[in-house]
Image 1 (cartoon, rainbow, N blue to C red):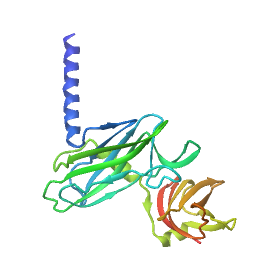
Image 2 (image 1 turned 90 degrees about the vertical axis):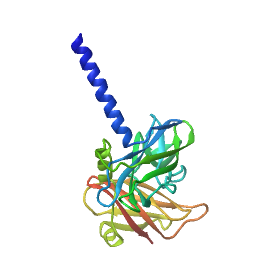
Image 3 (image 1 turned 60 degrees about the vertical axis):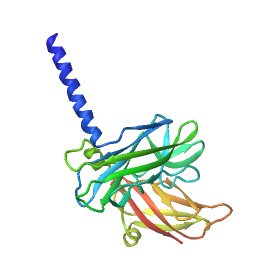
Image 4 (image 1 turned 60 degrees about the horizontal axis):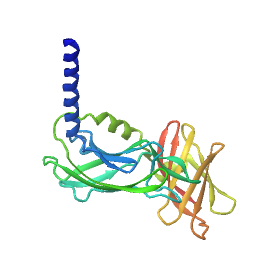
Length: 263
């Protein structure tokens, strides 16, 4: 009996130490309807930046949206403007999935999603405090806005329990390629003399999914059929004849983000 009590006490102490350590590298979870959010840190200043992340934990049957969801939905908004000793913030979006939401297909996330964030300090020798105001949508039976204000002093020493997670998520981010490379791996064909195009992938691996972004009120619908991506531009009462889009393509060999000219 004494042995079992001692083991239990040791485990409790280890758990408390682990939780205390984790608290140095993350904010407390802020709970909203059907979701929770927090800031996490991969640890100390390395490779000229701090690697951090915004983690959104979604309840079962709840989704949130990508940076360009499609016909409906609202992209998350991350505001780091009140942070101290920060020269630049670079936010990355993992590639999403197509989700059927009330008969409308949107681009978004289910489960837990981590958005990696690279922080460039003004002075690497001075502590950095991240102050984040975040707004996002959490949609289950109904869609509700969620918001939180988070603050995290980035540690300058020690080892973070979130380093592995942030490193793995960052490694899976779509790799950006330029227009010259894009023209080598994508063949674009006009379809049906309208606002539709076929995008044929000629790179490594098999195309699994594709998403497209525009820089206007026009949005892009995408789907894959028989190994070929079909893209339609949609606007109220308009059939656009050309556009420059950014496609995010998911393949069996990784994910890529590339500019594509639709003519």
